[in-house]
Length: 342
Image (cartoon, rainbow, N blue to C red; front, side, top):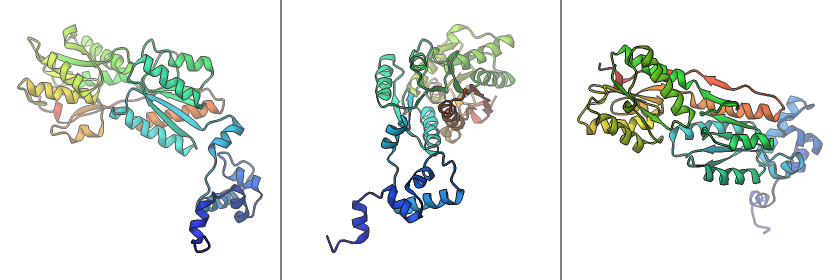
C-alpha cells in the first residue's frame, strides 16, 4: 500500500465536499451552494473557482442524497412508443441533452403504443419519484396524462397532442396541407395517403390537412385511397402495396412518416414503377436519411430537436411554479427528387 501511487490511493477515497471547500478556501456551505443549480448570493468568481476545483478533483454531487433533502429525484421520465423509431430517438436525444444541461437525468421507457405496457412502465417511473414526465406516445383515449394531472406530477406531451393538455408539437394539419399543395401544383389529382395511426394526432392531423386541401381544390380522396397503418417501414410497404393494387393506382403518395415513405418506395418498385418519375412520394419529419436515399425523399420537416428541448423547458417551468403554454412549431416542405419529375 505504501508503494501505491498517490493518484491511485486518491481514487480509493471519494472526494468530499469538504475537500473541495478546503482547496477553494471557502466554507463547506458556500461550496455546496456554488455547486447547486441556483448559486444565489455567491459571487461569480467564487462559483467558477469552486466548480473548476470540483472538476479537477473529480468531485461528484450525491444526487440521491440531495433528493432526500429537497424531495426531488432530479429525474425526468420519458415515455416513447419505441426508440427504434428514429423520430422518437431524435427527440429523446434532445430531451436528454436539455435535461442534462439543467442538472437532471432522464429515464426512458418503450411503451410499444400499448396501454397495459404503458401502465407498467409509468408505475415503475413513479416509484422512482421522478420529478416530471415527457409523454411521446399519447393517443385518443389514453389516460396517462389525466392520471399524472390527478397525482400532481408535472408532465408535457411531445410530438403528439391531446385536447386540454400541455404539449410541444408541430402544426401537423398545416404540414399535411403543405404536402397537398405541392402535389396539386405538380398536377397530381389522383393521390393516395399512408395515414399512420388515426388515434395519434400525428397521423390524424397530417391526413386531415392533406385531404381537406384536395377537397378544397375539387379533388376529394375516396376512402380506398387513404390507408391506415402503424408507424413503421413494413407497414408502409403493406399500405403502399394496397394503394398500388387499386384499379387506378395513385400518381403520387403522401406518407405521414418518413419510415412509411421508405416502405412505400418498395411498394412502388414492386409494382414496376419508378419513384419520382412514375409515382411521386412525400414523407414527413425529414429525417437525416431522407436526403441520402438513392432517390432523395421530399419530406415535411419537423424540428425534432426543438420539440425535445422545448418540452424540457415546459417541465422546468412547472417545477418553478409557472404555467407554460403549449407550443406549435411551423412545418417546412423540403422538396427533393421524389416529386421533381412530373
